[in-house]
Length: 299
Image 1 (cartoon, rainbow, N blue to C red):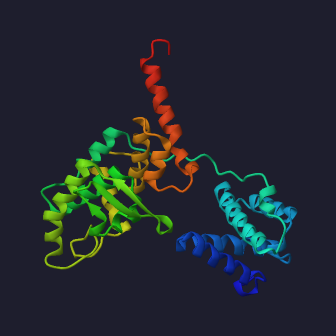
Image 2: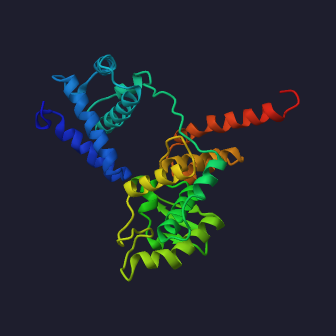
Image 3: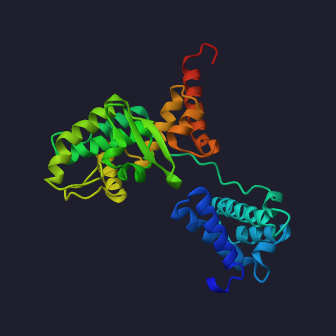
């Protein structure tokens, strides 16, 4: 069924417009909602998605599960439908939200790949600080780990977002939500050194708003930095597969290991929901258990 044949197409688009205006959702999130709702509308056809019963929704999930859809996919679909039906309910077009009567479609527990502190130190020691590219990459890795940034946030930083004197970075995260993150003295020194030396030489007289630039004077990209991280991991002898996001995981886990409150970590990461941050707690708990077993006389 083509998109224009979906009877609820105008209502779905109204919902997406409302979600964008109300929450400032990213294009990627809106695209995910649209994909989920179109898929659901096609599966429920000829019944209208907006008037589907609890039984219709149960049948939808059962058929998708039988088709081999991953639990994480079903969990995301559940979220999309829940928000859609709440929108329809608020408009007065139905009297209930059928998704609220379903059992939760839970994704399998996710264990993020995390570097220990020694591995992070090895990674930070890998860039060549006699080379402009190495100076830039060292500053990027330091800032990424010091602030727990998403790679998109890191490469999107303008020069004006970093206040070395105050030791803070102004970050625009998902949904264009702003947060202020402390950067620490070591990261501040690395960024200062990069800006005063390597960045000027890389730009070679060109103007750029982006904090981190390439040898051609353009802004660094996510893909380019991903390859740089892979390169340094190999130099550092880190055998596990890592990405820039691995350092965000390390940031959160290491803070928890050292006793930081979970809600503080949530604020620093820019998570809207505490449950998202809780994926790191079992790693910290395992670390604490190992310490207890190694040092407690009655362990």
